[in-house]
Image: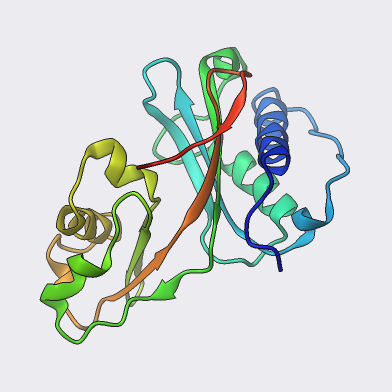
Length: 201
């Protein structure tokens, strides 16, 4: 399996997500699109919608595990991002004022660490995304989140636990499983604008 997407494939991923978002907000069908072979590989995907030019979050939904083909995961995530329960459903009159971003994830791997106080040393801000999990509680933060908020690794761990419904220092608890993953991020520079690969460092 080829890990990284070519720039043209990243652009196509965003175009598919944009087409799906536009159709969902207008209560229309997105129609079918022929996709290259790599879009048949199973990948974790998140689609993020942001208000422009404020960059305030407008919706972000996805699949951390590679359970769907890349093409299907983009379609499902883009549809769901329009109905993120944290926000009202996306309206058609907002479409020209949002940007669409697609994050394509590596499979999450558990962070093994006997001394939990050393965990921040194993998290690379600007590279890693995190998942915290304990029983029914599970939450994820994408790699771009700590960069946007200018968090250090310890804060990033705490905020991931909060996202999971746990206390911010729960990452010190051996019963809390922590996973990290990386992402290729492709985004519109402005609504319907040029698609670029986002670098976090």
